[in-house]
Length: 238
Image: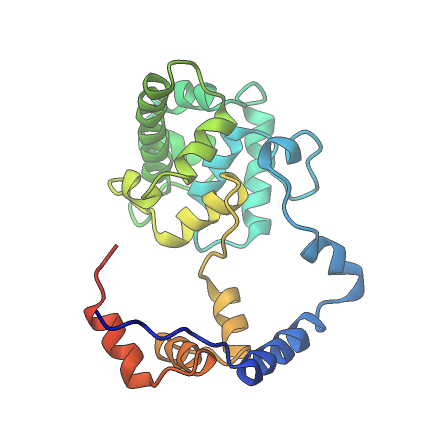
């Protein structure tokens, strides 16, 4: 069997990327450096002393999830404040489940989400779908673990499943961006949601397409691009 040659890093290419990354980092205002580079504490810890824009209960995670898509966070925050005032005792996932399960879509939209009901959007369907699917997932998880699980364990366990997206496949309005958002902020999985901000940042680093990522990998490890293309084409899928 032919031995695969050892890979060597092209330090010149890596140094070039590091300089570009440093230039992007240096654009962050000094008073924001700690916020940006300090890392993200687990949701269970953050909820104990919530900041101005932080969600204050597990129930709010699902309400925000139904609102955040194609909305500025200021719009979401106003509706979350309204939700807190109208339903101050609805804080846990189970309490939210009991609240929305008997409601029709119009009531969910107008009463819970504070969103004028229309057939053109599916925000109430999204919220009810998330609550239903996570309710079923919780029962499966508790049977698997042989005990009750907290709301925080529920989100963390889901985020660490082999395919979190697949579990939410039948929920209308769920996309990869929303799944990444839930995983990163509330499932405590460090990831980067692919959105307009990450797209802009990657372009500033010189990556505007998957082909450019592949080209960089080839240059970084001194692999002929044609060879890397063949590796991708014929390698076994995991």
